Length: 152
Image: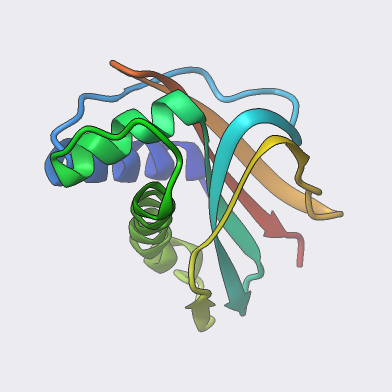
């Protein structure tokens, strides 16, 4: 499966049509990223036939800027609005990828979005998983969209 193209297509569609932000994809990273500083990560889990997660990782500045674009207001701190907006963006991306992930016949359910924010944190990657992590540039800076799927 070519998840790279699907992630790029879904990210561009959602960000450009829902929040009117131009996004430019970069080259997929060759190493996973698990340590974050002054950042926010919004995640949605996949359960059922395929298990894994979809995550958006953004610096505080980028998360605030995207939330401001999404909600049409100025945002100067990481607050509930930012967490909700970034969680909803992750949810929309996961929902867009769900048909592709379950295309070989199995039922896949999505979790509610969860958000981690902090000065410094580490996220553990799934053991024995296929993963892809793609950087995207927007006017506020860069964010990452990552997909991990447990190997069958």
